[in-house]
Length: 306
Image (cartoon, rainbow, N blue to C red; front, side, top):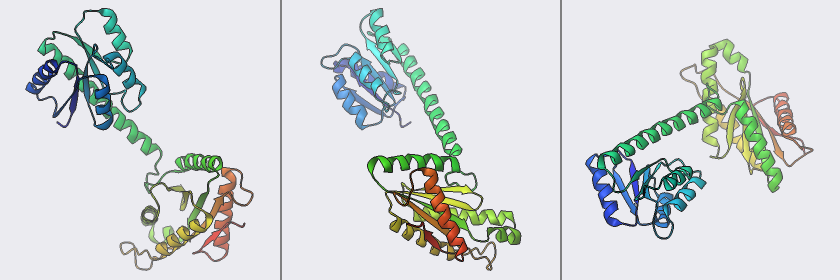
């Protein structure tokens, strides 16, 4: 088990006692210690911790202040904290629980009770972590085109709106490239839709290889794709478009047939530029440029009219 625990108490002997009890059950691999809340906070900000046992009464930053600081931070608030108190003061326990503690043990504590409460919190955290992963997976699936594994149209529109508003706010630049596979219907008619899907996947992989980490590639619909390029001027976007066009033309599909050659047409638009004032107008200008590329003979990239 790679889990870790942090024991916060101004008494070294108490910390060592807790560590001794926990080590007998092999609950954790890593054991960290802190003498007060300030030292503990520095620790949790610099290393992962799965569970914290925290004394309430300490010099400097006490347990209550530590709990308040933990609850205020999004990255720390889900770490379970078990209070350690030497008082039978019900009010202190309630206050600690209200400020974010998950449970409490009272000093002098019983080893079996301490272990039982720790195991419960570890199990709860494990379930919470699994739920977070599941939710993240669901979110990714809801934003992803199932065939190409690129972003889907809904996520594209959300990203484009966010980047457009950011460019307006910061007086930055944003480019959009619309891509369409030339004569894709002929690919499906000649080789079948399953082979056509393989072509779409190959083009999606090509886009991933040629884009930066913060660019967004999406399947816009059918055989059409869209690329969102933040902080990219139209001249730079045209260079990206031309590289993609050349790379697509160089693709081969031995598993489908040597006769299959792929070409793409691309339309490029940028903000600020022209009379673009909205996301819809940016998409429209990129579509117009794509149409011009098709009309001019396909297998080329054309930028929007200035």
